[in-house]
Amino acid sequence: MSSTYGYTLQPINYELSTAEQQEAQFDLWRKGNKISYKVWAILAAICVAAIAGIVFLHGYSTAFFWIMLVGVALFLIVRFFGLAWYVKREILKHPTQDIKGIRIGVQPQGLIMIQKMGMQEGRAMTEWKQVTEWKETDKYLFVTATVKGQTNALILPKRLVAQKFPFETVRKHLIEAVGQAS
Image (tube, rainbow, N blue to C red; front, side, top):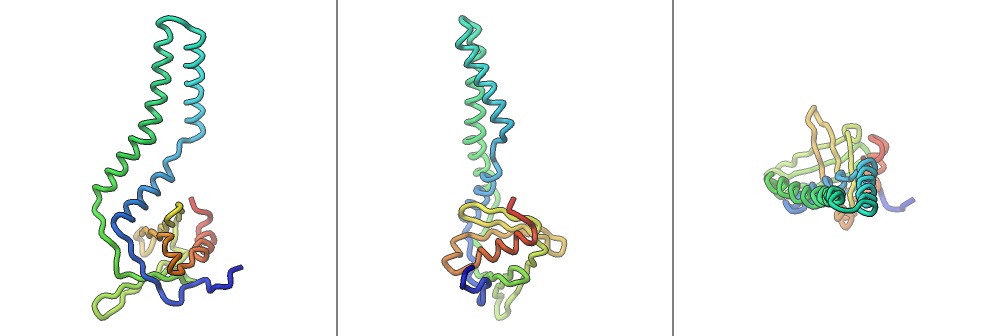
């Protein structure tokens, strides 16, 4: 058990550059872009059949088996490199703005965001019970919530730990409210 206070007494600065937002979106896509065991099994079966055909058959018949191996290689290249290139290109098409001037805090009832607008402060609360899903990568924690009928997404960069943002407390509440990260 940690001896530090698990919530933020004062909200901390929450700033996110355009590049960070795009990197976070790509990280989230990459986390979900996994080849299933079933597809790996099919690819392995095709490779085994192609290699067996090349070894046991001779002559023009082996051309078909070489084409099978090339097909598997092309599938993997397109799946890993071509799709990543396409997704990055699509992410860059959507305009984003730097997020500045917002402070974020963690409270027992949820995440609070404060933005100064002129002489006034605007406050927004996302309660833990409003969170519908959350995901985590090495650099970011993504929270999706439905507030007043609208779906909102929040990207929490893990670099906020340097400002003493309590990620362990956030994870604890998210697991209680939604379950493990998807």
